[in-house]
Length: 194
Image 1 (tube, rainbow, N blue to C red):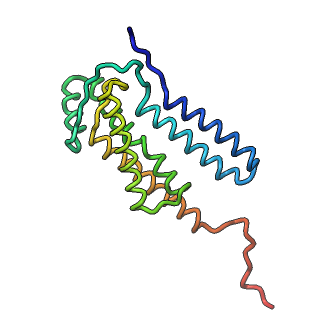
Image 2: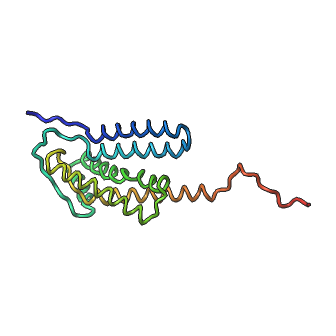
Image 3: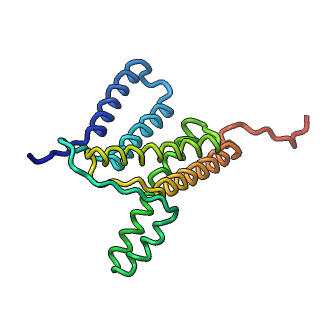
């Protein structure tokens, strides 16, 4: 019997999002629309991350192999090996590294803008979220629900660093917006004579 793959978590996430949006819109209509729109975009982003990292679940479970890579910055070694194998392999390896870095960049922005998280709390949340994803990939691969996903320390590092960059950019933008003078406020002219 052949296995079928199914995006279980993606479909559950979309169903949950639609239910939440329906109840939320019924309760609040157009109140706080900007903040709620940012929250909805965060929920969609979360569903996309789960889909990209967990993906399709196989039914029935397949006999799978698992790999654990615990050497930090091993991706540099992968680049050197891929560079010797040819142009396509090298750029594919660089692309995968960049995707891992960029994956949590929006999460860093959301932590600052939506949840107003401090730096150390944000760092911990970024690391724990990445660790949870890597652990789920490992467990689901071990029981055969995922096809050949690894627990990779480089993914932890790159995800966390990308999220930190997102937090830094968000902090700078928020600081710039808060310190910029508002042109719509009426400014008083102090040179007038009473």
